[in-house]
Picture (cartoon, rainbow, N blue to C red):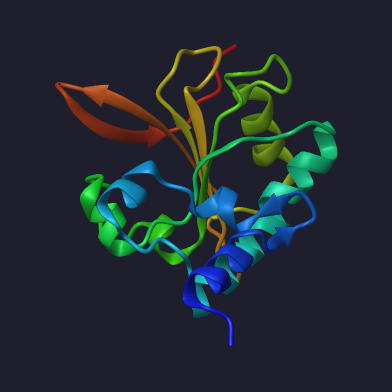
Length: 170
């Protein structure tokens, strides 16, 4: 009978879409450091599989280049430890990805943002901080039952994060 560590290692290698593994969407240095189990199970695993195939995979196929997930699934315990937005965060449900391609020239975060906005079904799409020409990263969520197509921009105002409707800059 396989040991728990062997089962965990096997599940982490599991492909949740043709170009994305479970390890890529559940990795967290904080979880490792604090000994937090950050492996999605049940409904959360199903949600992250839907999100990977409805959002991540079409982007990857469109650009034909690696797309980097900076944050995906967060267990409620991990979300609390990193002071995440709230216990109702779509990251905790397996419905959200933060994409950040700053380390490469192509595609840019703006290109990823624009592709999602113009071509994919999504629940929330957020231009996260950055500049008028490129977000620091792109937050996107997907709800397999109902998507709001809400497009926002995150800004800091008096030290607090606020979300405003996204207005495209000319």
